[in-house]
Image 1 (cartoon, rainbow, N blue to C red):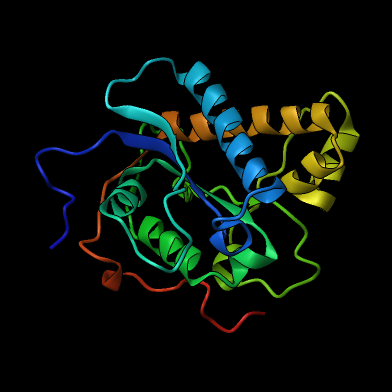
Image 2 (image 1 turned 45 degrees about the vertical axis):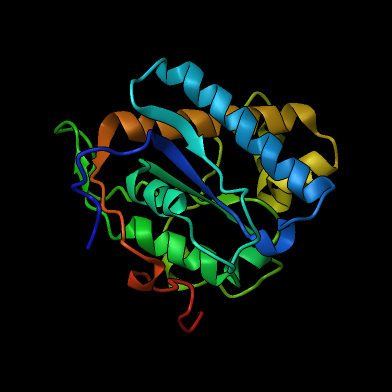
Length: 219
């Protein structure tokens, strides 16, 4: 039975960061460091923009165990209560059943505009280019959603570098100013969605209720 109507819940995250544990897992070094840094930087900006909100954490990042081994109640709760879903798009993510199920958990939830001027077509899913996918065929759920692209940047080349190399590439090449600008614009996008829409909670009782949304014929 779903726990969506449970009388008490943990603090709901404003955004949920979905990433491939296959490329990070228990590893140390740059991939793990970069994901952690990105999450922390994004959380700081989101917290600054929304201010203190009772019962809400800035974000959720699952670092407990390598993907595919178990689903904790905390992970299911976060996927079923967060307001914005942020998948870090990479070749590894596209092949991750774990990430495909996280996407499914979020996409089943109903999105309600908070005011009449809000679009009725918002998904509250904000795919971020993490690393180049080298022309890999994308699953339909990713093809059908516009990927995040920063606008109004101090240098137009920043958006180009981000689109070509992803956040991981910006960090690897030590383009610090470009990285900081992209994360700031992403935080603004997340908060704008939060202020315009309510994503109603739905927490699956177990992972067995979820399907891998990436497991379809790519095109």
